[in-house]
Structure formats: structure tokens, C-alpha cells
Image (cartoon, rainbow over all chains, first blue to last red; front, side):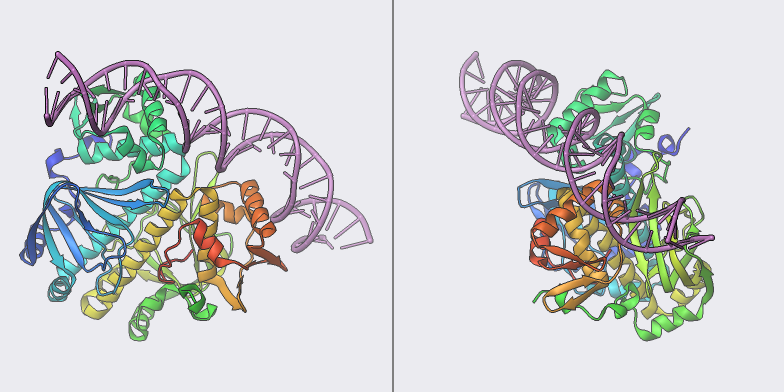
Length: 240
Length: 240
DNA sequence: TTTGTGATGTGATATTCATCACACTTTCTT
DNA sequence: AAGAAAGTGTGATGAATATCACATCACAAA
């Protein structure tokens, strides 16, 4: 059995898992809560990056738009995820947009407050670095997967990551418990909707996956893993 | 004048610049020195990641090989750069290879020793996070550039990054003071040698760049910036 | 029920890029 | 100086992927 199948139940998987309960509590104490409606933006590229965000509930996508109107989805964050540009103590500016894609409840952490907290608590600082490192490695491995194995490889890698983020085992099948449009998948891998549609069609015909009331169900994970030369990275790193 | 042209002299630009003199000294105190010859590997994917490396002199490339024998160059580190997988305090394993491409003198830092140092010195810990954040943003922006603007965009972005890393102004020209083969450039952008050769040919014909005794000389930086929709990120972020 | 809207599926065609093949040049080796 | 090895340049061709143009489907709103 692979790591991918040993994952915890969906609802408990989030990138804030690499913090201890105590640390997370400390972080929560310096947050102020905010609600954001689907369609709004948390920040735009060019905005000052001086906050961290903890997604208490909802979904936020980190995207980049090109001049020609194409959009690239770099990350999708869900309930329990912590995100934001995290070069604390540096006057910097966002390179990407944060689009709220589901009505969300968000805990906002001011850089200033974070600074103080990290100074006070060495153990939190250490966990924070751990989290930063994990996020970086997630970016690096995704980069590799999207660059090295063509569009089919990029799609297969993305499907695996979706399993690790939203997957629910059902016998030997894995249901991706999150509705995704072809366009969304396309924007995640830098391809067109049509290409994704054709690739998914191929995978369905080959019985690698199926659609069950509009959810993607993975029937043959090893096949996907083979296409993108998946090395079975830790689940918390191999995410969307 | 762009940031790109306001850069410090080549020899002084390195990613360890985001540390203060004192912090760097502290780091240097816990290093042990090592020599590595061109062609050797500092680590391979799968090796335990429990060290940081400070390149006192030389060059190291971080690469990934595919099953079909293609190689992808993720980073190129030079004299003064600090690198290594930096999720300290985590049992993790390298996802990439570190290939020594010039005879090098390397300061090696054990994770254990780093841990202690970071605990003792809050200010160093803060700078360390800053450095981690910077490296992550470098990865993210490179990812965007290589994914969103086709191979010509990827090449132009890479040339700009090479200017920021190895560039020397010469009037309005910028000499990339580092010999690069077409194959190397190809591996940096996930293209073939032939494609790079043709793209460079086009750029030469259009007077965007020229070769001067085997060094690339950029004549029209704004053109390159236009192709990859460069936003003039800080120079220390926009590197190879 | 009708109508509008977003999503899916698919053919035809165009573009981008890789592959193959080979000549030529430069640099290194002895 | 001669030969080997590495790098460059370029045509011909093919594969991967995007683009365009529709038909169809699913579902929500009026």
C-alpha cells in the first residue's frame, strides 16, 4: 500500500498540521477573523505582503493572470490551510493574486504580531520554518512535475495531488471529493480546457479513472504514478 | 533605469547577502570545509537532507533527471550562495541532485548545529526565515516564467535572470560573464538544444543580443522583459 | 416549461516544439 | 599538427498541444 492510500481522513489534512496544537493556538490568538465572499480577492499582485492567512473555512486560490487573459492556478488552499507570502520582516509585495473561490472565514495575522510571537517562542519559530520548508518543497516538486512530463504527466501529477488533498478511499478506488471543471484543471497545469478534456477522455477509456456523479474517481493510481514518475513523496508535501 | 541595471558588481551578488555580516560569521563558525571536484555530486535524490551548504568558491547545480535521460536544471549556485534542503528539524530526503560543476570549496553545516544556533540567536533565526522566504519566491517566480510564456518566454526570463546573476553593464549592454552552452540553457528551460539554438539565432538577428567571444551580450533588455511579462522583481529574487 | 448559461465533447486545422540527420566549427588532447 | 570530442547551425519531418468552431448537455432561474 502506498502513502497515498494511508492518508488520514480528508477533513483532517491541512498544511497547518505541521504545527503542534499549542503553536496553532498561539497563532490563533493573534488572528483577527474576517469573512470573504466567493469572487472577492484577498490580495492582488503588487499589494504589500504583510499578512498571513489561516483559512478557517472555505477556499482560496493563488493565481497569476497573463496579459492574454490566461490564468494559472499556483495553489488551492482549503479549510485548515495557512498561507500568505512568508518572507516575514521584509518589505515585499505579492507576485500572485489570492482569489476567494468559496465563501470563507479567514484568520488574518499581521506580520508585526507574528514577528513578536516568533521572537517569544523559539519552538513556534522552529515549526514555522518547518512549515516554510514544506511549502517550498511542495512548490519545487510541483514545478518538476509540471515541467518534465508533458501535459499528460502534469495532469496525472495533479490528479495524484488532488487525491492527497481531497481523496477518499472507497475500496481500491479513490474519490476526489471536490468538483472540478476541465477549465480549472487546465489552469492548474497550464493547458487548455480542450486538451484536458481529451486527456481525461483517454484516461476514462483506459479505465484509469471514471466520473461518478461529477466527481472524479481514480481507479488505477499506479498508472497515474507511472506517467509522472511519481516517487511517492510524503503526502503533506504532494498536495495541490 | 531598471533595477536590473542598478545591480551591484557581479562578484558581490549572492543569496547569502540577505544575512548580516555577524550572522554569516556565526554560520561560518559551525561549518566544516570541504573540497569537491567538478563532476562529483554533493548529494543525490533520496539521500537524507540534513545539511546546508555554503559555496565559498565554485559552482553547484541542482538538477533532476527523467527516466528518458533528460536533465532539468532547477538552480545554479555560485560563490557566496547558501543552499541545501532547508526544512530543518524534519527527517527528509532530497528530491533533487546536487552536481558540482566547477571545483569547489564548500562549507558544510550540519542540521543539528544549525538548530542549536537558531535557538541561541533569535536574530539569526529571523534572517534565516527571510532567506527561506526569498528562495521560495525565487522558485515561484521562475515556475511562473517557465510555465506561462512558452519556450521563448522561458528563455528570455532565463537570460534576464542570468543578467541579474552574472551580468556586467557595459554602456547600455549587459555582458553575461559566464560561458553557457546551448544545452545548458536548454536544460534550464526544459527545451532542446536545437530549439534554444534557433531562438538565440532569432534574437541575434533581431539585434536583441549578440555573442562576444562566446559570452552572451544583451543589447535590448526591454525586449526580453516584454516577452516574459517581466515585472521587475527585486534582483535578489530574480536569479538563476 | 422555456430560456439562458456554463460546462463538456469533438472534429478540423494551425502552431509550437521535438526529433533526426548531418555538416561545420571550436576546443581539447597528445 | 592531427585527431577526437564537444559544441553550433540548420533543414526536414513528426508529435504534442493550442486554436477555432460547433454541437450537445446539465441545470438553474424566470
